[in-house]
Length: 177
Image (cartoon, rainbow, N blue to C red; front, side):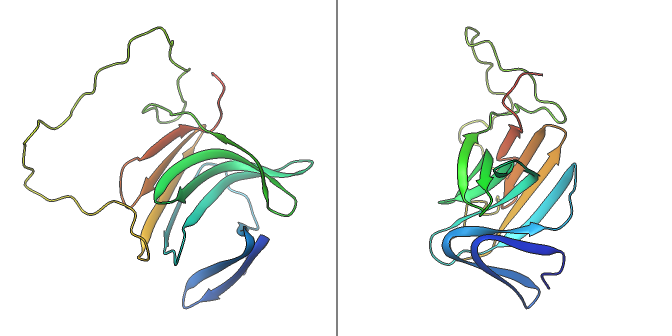
């Protein structure tokens, strides 16, 4: 059931067969949990019929003009993370792409010095090497079930699409610590 949740924006939500089913009726909408969580993990399986623009907004905080939060989205099969600001009707009024956390677990390091050369890639597979186990299809699957997982701890969010890992690792703020 939708007990413990409330809608925001232009979408019809219902519970059906153990699933939440949402359909946009305008610019789209949100299904918001009635209580807050701090550091958390979120897992869901989703299927899109038609164009796909889905995601999860974490650390949703009320502002004078609406709400803001950290957004992990799947749009056109690509996983991205942004800081979003919504108005009181659930419409996106501002978005900012979040910077990479570069492998840190709890605290994202400061931005790199732009005058330094980048580090080389480590642990890459030699060209032509054959692995004994085939990888699962981890790409986005249009019209089929996909898995989305977000892990939010301190100021770092890690996002996984179909068990890739992590495909997105971002600092939830764009300032240096």
